[in-house]
Length: 349
Image (cartoon, rainbow, N blue to C red; front, side, top):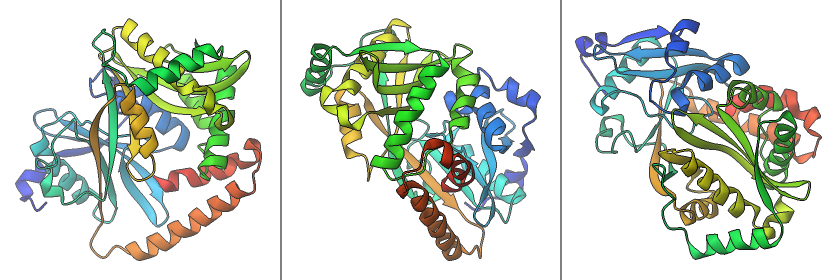
């Protein structure tokens, strides 16, 4: 990614002020470049945001956060991917300009294959990891054909008396977090985001009508819950969880069946199902495909300054993981882990 001084000088690197953050609303670059989403990151974790801009108006957004060895630049924390509004050929120049301004800071970049092909991004080198994105194309029409097994699960859920409903209430947010906390700690063995983060999401999106909580209940018991956010005309399934001891009733099949119908009824061009890790979530990938999700790649790159002590960073990250494991393995109540979640969760980005 060696470029001339002239090439890099054409790219400006500026901090994002509250005014410029507001102007990003409606930019057409999807959820993760929206002012509401960036507002959550700034308000909750205190990230400082930076924008690179070229002469044609193309731009990229990065957050300056704290790693185990100091500052790091991320595009963007807790975001499934990015779709920067610029031409693929300009991307290396933007990254080079950012590295010139922050010569001693690691840079982590995540990009969806919807933005460019891997061949177009070959100057970045090989990605350090690959995940996948599923989207269900709608354009106001019913979803593409679903698998027979997915539809059987929907029918089983309906026969079992399960019902799906949309909610905007704080009580539903609490119900979501109880399931989310259990899923992260008991099944996945991972530290969860703190509840206060989801309160920020509720305030920025759900309370203002730009999102909702979709849940499946059997009588009054919540069996599955999902936080769905809206950006532009599209819906984004961002977080989901379910009661692991009730999966045989197929609550997730019903949740997505009804969510897809709702998105189509709203005239959404697509329902975004988010990121799935290729190594750890094969079952999730099959499930998203079974409901009509179309798969595309998400690539990640990590660019380190020359001489950066990467081996030491890995050791420190291992220590943080051990601490998180101690917190999770002791099966603490959610209220007892919030301080740990707030401090440790950003270090895993």
